[in-house]
Length: 56
Image 1 (cartoon, rainbow, N blue to C red):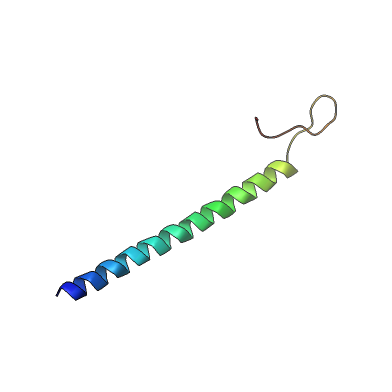
Image 2: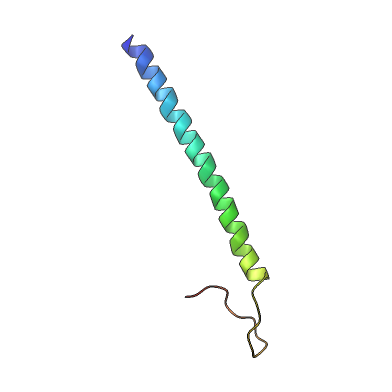
């Protein structure tokens, strides 16, 4: 009974980790796309130069 519970617990942990890693990959891809869009869609300032789209 104990080995069966350990195997089920291991499967649950691995499934959870796999799902979390897949979700993190999707979040990373979305952030990358938004970051690249920020470079493409940044507005020009009053001098006609392309301004920075970030604050720092």
